[in-house]
Structures are given as C-alpha cells and as structure tokens.
Image 1 (spheres, rainbow, N blue to C red):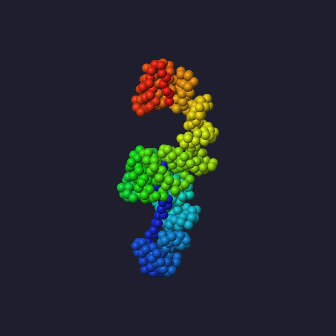
Image 2: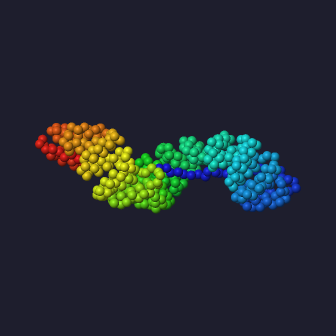
Length: 491
C-alpha cells in the first residue's frame, strides 16, 4: 500500500527589483517609505506608499515594478499585471520585471503569456535561476514534463543547493512516474534541509513505493524525531513496519495516525491489516468498519472485513459482506475473484450446501481459468458425493496448476475409494513433491501402503505425519490401530 505525502507543486519566486535611480521629479519619501514597509513585511502599507509615489511619477519603471511586485504579493494579480506590463515597456529590459510579470500571468491562468515572459527574462539573462525555476513549475503544471525537467536542470545548474528546486523537480518526477529520479531529488533536498519533515515524509513514501521498507522506516523516524505529531509520518512508518512484519510497532504508529486523523481511510484500513495479521480479529473488524464509514464502497476493505468475520466463525455475516463487495465492484472493470471465492467458502462454512454449490458453479463460469475456483468446485462435488464430477474438476485444476498438492491428494482419495491403490499412491506422492509437509497426503499415503499390506511403510508415514503435527488425530488413530488385518482410515 502506498502512503503518499504531498508538497506544494508551485512555489513562486518573488524576485525583487533592485532599488535604482529614482526620477528626480518624484518625491523620494513615498518610495523610500514603501521600501522600508516592504522590508518590514507590511505589504499593504508598502503598496499604499508605492501607489502614492506612482501618482507623482506614473511612468517611472522602477516605481511601477515595485507597485506590481507588492500587488502580486497581496494577491492582486490584475493590478500587478497592469503595473509590470507598463514597467516592462518603459524599462531597458529588466529580467526581474519579466520574471515577476510571468508570475502575475501565471496567477490568473494566462499560461501562454507567463511562458513568454519567463522566456523573455531568460533572453535577457540566460542564467537567471528564478525564471528557469518558475518556467519549470509552469510547464510541470501543464504536464509538459520534458520542458519542465530541462528547466529544473538549468535552474539547478545555476543554484545547485536550492532545496525548493530539488523538491518541486522531485514532485514533477513523481507525477511523471519517475520514482527513482524523484527519490534522487528529494535526497538532494534532504542533504540541504535535513530536518524538513515534508521532504523526509515524501522520501518515506517513495521508498515504500520502491519496496525499500527499511529506508522508509528510517526516513519516517527521522521526520517524527523533528515533529512527533506528524500523522502522515506515523501512517507511513506503521505501513513500512507492517511490511517487515514488525506488527506491534506498526500498530502503535497506526493507532497514533488514526487518533490524529480518525477520518483517514488509509490509516484505518492499514490498522485493520496489521491487527488482522496479529489475529486480533475483533479490533481489526472495528478498524475496517471505521474505514468503511469514510469510504463505504471500497471493495478491498469489504473483502478484508468479510475475511475477519469469516475467521471469527461468523459465516453468515461474512457472506453478506462478500456479497456487498461483489455489488460494489465497478462495472466495466476486472472483477475481484477473491470476493466471489470467499462468498462461496462462507456459504459452504455456513452449512448452506445448495447455495454454496450454486455459487461455486457460478464462480467457475465467471473465472474458468482460476485453479482456486476450480478446486473449490471440485471439493463441492466431492462433498456432495459426486466423485466422477469431482475427479473431472480436479484434473482441470492440474491443467491450470500442475503442482496443486490438494488436487493430487483428493484425486488420490477418489482412486483409493475405487480400490485403485496404485494410482492413489502416484497422486499422494505427487502432492508431497509439491508440499513435503502436507500431513493429509502423508497420512493418506500411509493408508494406501496399509491397504497394500506394506505395514512398515504405512507406520513410517504415520510417524512422519505426527512429527510434523503431533496433534494430528487421523495419524494417531491409524498408528495405534495398525494391525496386519486392518485397514486404516484416509483423510
């Protein structure tokens, strides 16, 4: 499962116009006051001062540029464009003015004009970092990743230690599916800003996607060392710990994630997975139900909820849940075989023999090339006493999965029932080639030997079964009752 952290796609660079000579006929007091207020962070006051200065010198490109820049800072992109266009027309070619004009155009969605402005800035100053960076962000937003990647690289050639350039380049690479390259950029950003929790969390997510769970654990732990309350980092760390089967730690972090964000579907769902892995089925059920309260039609969550209900022996409820999962599967998309399969098993376990048999037949028609489905149908025939039909289905299973231990074992039972002991032994041995620890086939092989009168070989197999499972009752009974004149019971 993927836990994705997100970063801002675009970070506008507000490159400020350097203070140059001011027109002599103006009043420098308003302009200087604007600069002072801007430096103090009072953008509204600075704008008022620049507008006052502009009233005296309406055509001065420096005042126009500052008025446009501070207007953009205040979110007034329309006024920013008005001032910056005039400044650009009246200046001798300021790359900074064109860059900020590009920012203003981008703010109002005029992408073509924004691109033209950034490129004009780069014609004036080819190694201008801000224009390369902002053009890269613009192209990435539009999905033009080839140009975006080129511009990020150009920006980083100029300023290789700019963390935001590495971050946004990484984000664009993520969107383009270039996970390895994205990881490289976030790692570069981490070297520059080792305590940037967004970078650390995103690295954790990327490591998870690439299957490097240990690196993900380290990245998320580093993020939580900076801020112990990061819900996303707890979620990612819990997921990575689950993947490496450190379940107790995983539960702790996923519980913290759900406490911080109780309506986070992924956190609740992943908590259910870990609790189920620990066989804490009641708690897992509660987590899955909380997840479904957020996303009621999630097929995977419904399937897992049905599974934990099944594990608790509540087969009727499990059947209902699997039916809901089937109903929620989107039309026109591949259907989840496991939902149909689990429904058939639930009906079987619930003792609804006829319904279960009908379900197995229906599932086999839907998924004719599934060895699991064919095996389930074969078992259903066997349980009904329809041994010939069962044999035909078991043989179909072996065509789909030649090494199926269960299919070979059950075929062996059918031949044993037909008194064809030699053929039965062939299939019991075939089952054990696939799974040497398969106690059912070991015991049954012993039963077959016993029917041939090979009592030492039979005893050897029963003992072998009990070495694997000392509590396996059929083997216990067979070895206790073993007499030359008796037949043993297969299982």
